[in-house]
Length: 319
Image (cartoon, rainbow, N blue to C red):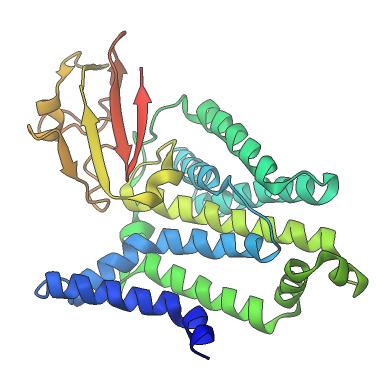
């Protein structure tokens, strides 16, 4: 009985313990409504991606291209908004882009029997190339309309809109997996493909469905992340892993003013700073201060120089 309870509620118990520890360390600031809402806003995109990944894991498969789909969703939505496309259509396009990628993954895995680990790993590389072709390898921020950032920063009755979206998706996910025949069929396929096929379940169709739903939610998460930070990074899928930006050995020149961009010029002398994703005034690409440069100021890497930017806990090196 104890083992079963630990299996069912161990994760919840660990979460309660972690919350208790942080509450004891910072009692004045941690147990506040503002901090709670901020945490939910930060965690909402990750929750969406996790829910989507659960569809694929339910049928005993893996999707290693989710991070790349998040990047694609953000880039697609941001680029369309720059072209003047209505904001709802931009977000819908991000979902559709993810849906298409997910269907391709599902067909390759279900039709040709290629391991999902290999398929999605290769798809991630393909998507990197697609994103590079769309952006030229640079962060998309110049020309993004203010309206595009509204969904990411909007609050309804004091609750972040992005948190509400994540909560609604969880409710839909719960209903789908536990109270609809399609969800139960996904469970059956995960339990035994042979038994599910014998029972008349169309395994091919539902395996594709699992990958499609996962990728669609990843695309939506990417668009919301881009909306929240006000930029679409080419590695935006890695945004979900941390919260510290780091810059090292900055030796760049601005392509407009041709000024050297030193460590002090970017980070105020510390070389390392905590980044608040809600501060859309900061540029994810080169962090110019507004009193030095305009938003249209773009960096140009000098030959032989390099810089490393840790996007929410990850690092990307440009040489």
